[in-house]
Amino acid sequence: MVSRKPFVGGNWKMNLHTSEAHALARAVANSCNTPAVDVAVFPAFPYLVEVSTVLQGQPNPGVLLGAQDFYPAANGAFTGEVSLSMLQDHGVAAVLVGHSERRHIIGEPETLINDKVQAGLEAGMEVILCIGEKLEQREAGKTDAINAAQLAYGLAGVKPEQMARLTVAYEPVWAIGTGKTATPQDAQAAHAACREVIASLFNGKIAQSTRIQYGGSVKGSNAAELFAQPDIDGGLIGGASLKSDEFLTIVQAAAARSEKG
Ligand code: PEP
Image (cartoon, rainbow, N blue to C red; front, top):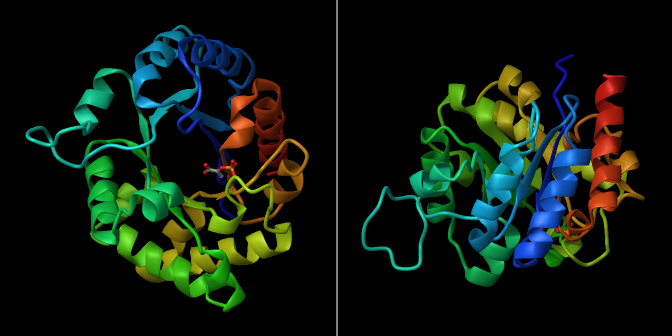
């Protein structure tokens, strides 16, 4: 059996201003820095520099700095957009791609999501590809088909050796920010199905070593039972990542799973 190091990301979304971002980054750097778990935070663009400064002073292994979005071109006439090299200038090492709020509120198409996955990996970033079904799709029994299609689109053109830096976040849209969480059994079933899709797109070895996070109203109180599932390798956390003590409980739940092997 391959052991996958759990990965917990805090997606701060469009929340917090300078002093709050500074305080949260400091608390996360001080309390959530453990070799048992990879931890990343994803502040809003204007606070990346502030958070980067806070994180730079921490000991190894360090909390990774992530960005919530970017544009997959090197530079040029793309008003309002931010490139990967601009992010790397400020120590950004991880990027989110395909988050449901970008797919369904902003309207990002699969072609752009795939361009971003490929550009992020080419630039040497840790890429988290977010996928997941809407409520009506789950009720119609289409969860696995939607996840399979989003994986196939998102991972098109990715080289096998790049998959070591690719994490999948399975985030059922109906569970994001709603307080509703998939049961550990339903989440496990979806994760296992995603792993089979990755095996069919690449091979079994890559499928076994690819981390698949769960996201959707994860809290300190439900993280342990979700992360205890064999195919759930940590989480992508929204609301609960804004409170350092709650986020720490979630990271500790991931560390406990890591220690169990
Ligand atoms: C997310 O933003 O990816 C997310 C899962 O949010 P929340 O934890 O608030 O549901």
